[in-house]
Length: 469
Image (cartoon, rainbow, N blue to C red):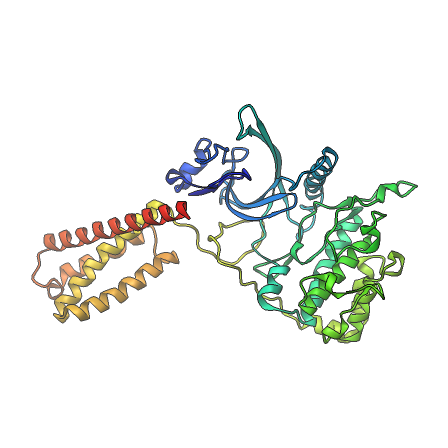
């Protein structure tokens, strides 16, 4: 199994441990350390990072496995590590924002099925790379949403249609209505923070910039801390003023406009003279939806819709648009190639194939070699033609190997199938080609050992290349 080192300065973060390929060993294994920098790899004794998902201004996110759950549940481990040379005040603010995300996810993640659940939040103190130095990292563990964000989807398939935009609004507006009812403003809505699960369901992510709305009579409790994404933040947020539910509605409207136009940078649509986004000439949508989006993006907060519910009611006020959204079918995500996901009970998902351990690979190759020997003996005895026998045997063997990769054949099947084939050859003398059963067994066992040897060799070469590259 490969474990990814989370130390940012690690020169070679990928580590492979053969003894962790077995799930039983994985659950009881002692702490493992990075072979390059000595960083502890099993976080909090249970979370095993296996792949870097991405890095941002406040740290990095890793696809991980939780070895203390029955299905080795996949999760996302987010590491707090702000980039750049920050002052102590800025560093403290960044850490507060990271901790705030954990607090908010704990509060609302379990209450809404379109917000990821929080699983854990903990610090890790380790020896630094320099003598007599210690490094401290903070980690947040949350639910893994298996899919792609809307920024990735836009890059993959291009502009969104009106029906797709309406589906987005109908999916995310109820989430915002729920979040705002808890006195929380998200403050960082954009395509990359909306994730589409493989089943088409949309999730709202990244609550690291949220603002808790207080009842301060002076309104100072609502002041912005200056954390926003350029182009998506309305004037009141960019100026460091108060934020409101309509602040999130503004960002959501900009998100929809970018997806409709196919534009990646919102600032390219901004017209300084009118102080608004100029976008309608780049799309072909109903005037009713265009008016709704324009109202959501007005400069003054009090001129916009004041709640997500108001936007939903405005959308429903047009029968034509309502019918369009009802006819829209949830799209299926085509994810980029990635390691096969481990079953996760918390959300519905499509059927997937789990990772093969080293033992399973070797047993499978032994089965393939043994069965290939039996098939070759049987067909050569019937056809007396080595080329034809080779082609037919190769085709059948390919089918068997494919069936193993899909786990249609596994466990006791790997014993039962060769046993049945051997019995057929034993009771049908025509298939033996003049060989006695002992000779057949010797030939098949030799083929089995050759297959195991080749599999081990190719696996070793792959691991060496992985470490070098």
